[in-house]
Image (cartoon, rainbow over all chains, first blue to last red; front, side, top):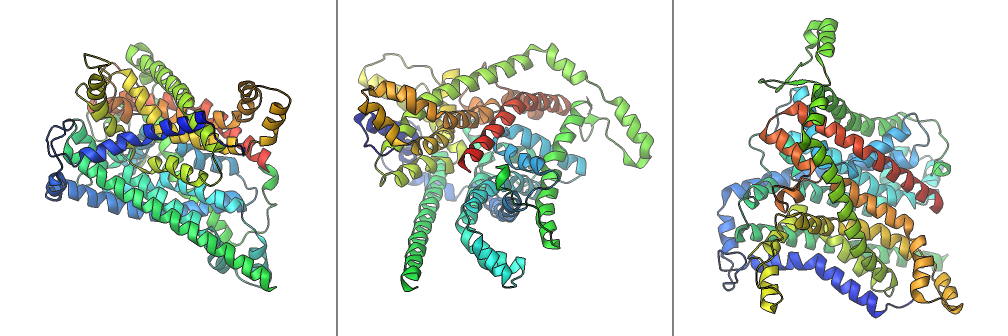
Length: 273
Length: 308
């Protein structure tokens, strides 16, 4: 569709995006509220951010969450990239549809089911619950998201370079690291970021699989939210939103710059030949 | 999709490792847990650690295993049919998810349509604006609505300021708040596939219709809507399936009479500590969702084939 937008299109976009953004904007504004009453404006203040820095429990939870997210995102990226390669490259093999089912099902499966089933597995294995069980649980559902993101990158992939390398005697593993990986890297990085934020965000699966000493930030936020809205929680949320927004925008700018540079180099290479 | 799969070639050790490692992981952490859930759903609740009986004792060898098998029963499932709470939760989850999906479609379609009709230069930015909330914490986005919807919240303050209402509207802790929460949280899931199918739409079809004197609304009805149907279906599945098992939204925004199965399961597990019954609840929920999940996957595969 190439025709210009009508007033109807512009209005629906404006309304749609204000619906998407207004709640978050209000939350950010009210995190700077002087008043303890969350919905009454009492003047600008950063005191809730200061009190946040003194809240050890919250900081501990944040530290646990970041560690879980970092480890699980990294493992999930390796496993998810492997799974994507299997889906796109490995041809037919026994159990292929089972495998693709196992990759796609966690994307839509209700979190209560995933959480409950993983907990029961850990109990059956006699595994003490805590940091590592949350990490394993997050890795499992995040790797499926990574696989889908990397797969979409692999599908539009020109195989001739890989084939050329292999014809010239390059071993498959080296071909992967020298040729395949650099080309699918934007997808892999996007997959890692997605896995990281999914883990940062998850309440339900973490609640099921966690144990003593491994309370994550969403669990902490959730237990406080149940008691009511507080400016302090608004401040935590604002920090999280700011970090994620900055990361996503930075990543998209970097990818775009890389893409334009690659296109320019390709054009230059064609001009030379 | 099938025809794109390359013919099998001789696999090296590395090739086998590539296939086996993710397989092993998913079999252990995704498939095996379901079998355990199924097994425990057939067990009895017990005051023990873990709180169910029988536990299979491998030390007794085959006889212990067999004794375990014979001790399993369908009792929990019978219990689910006897207590009204459970089947009411299932029905109400499906109804709430269905209504929310429909509302998401009503709001999401004009957004996706507007994006597809906007100038090429805007589109990456608009796409980014849709994806960005998806990256922000789900919990935070649901939480933000509490401050807006509660009795002395921003929405009521605003409406009373305008003089539209004299008494605050009670929205928080009702099903309406749950609809708002689901629509808000899942909107990007619907807009993205819908936008993808609307963007690919051939503009010349609409021009042809216009040249032949077809009014725009009729062209939309006869051309745009049918051609965007795959996107509509994909988007609706992506909203409906997770919404059925939603826990956070009904728990934080819904009231005590908002019944949703995710919440029922959570209460059964964490408050009543009845692991066998919550496992049975999960098994039935899974059975309800298997049909839409399989339909969704088939549809995705069909779309991939059409592209290829």
